[in-house]
Image (cartoon, rainbow, N blue to C red; front, side):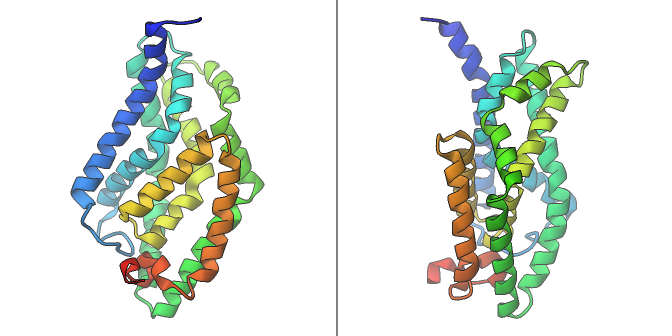
Length: 252
């Protein structure tokens, strides 16, 4: 038998840190936005406020799936583990915060599409579903997902980082692979409604399963096929895309 209570705590600590941060983000989102109906566009927020909310959303949705990589990275740290893991997490979230800038522009554009006649919103929704479905089946998705699922090669790379910015660089580098893996899933939020908490929970579950479940690659492909099917089905059931068609899924 190897290791003891101290070893278990060292391995669980970094993962627990990210899970606590994710839980705090979920709590804020539920208490602040839980009663909001699906809305198109930016929910009336300006860029700074949108980026703040977007970053909290990414923390809630992405950090649970990142806990495994964080735990591995923490094992390479011998001193000041807690503070350095905070920096690693900040670097990771900075990538997603930066992704919120084009995300805001996309939300503005899709919000305008939602104000067009109902048929136009449905066409845009179908296009978004199709883009996600196709991307889920591409080699680039596979490559990024493989780095998230088997990050040993990344750990060797991060071990070569030097200087005070090494933890920030490691977090940002891993965040870039997560962005490459999950960007198209996040675009679906525009279809379901940016602050649609049920959609957020569903997408967070998919992302965690893709990265951590033994059948994660199969999950990614199944989601791709399902998304392509939704691109067709939305023409008959506009309520599948409440963020673009204004339809209410409860009325189905």
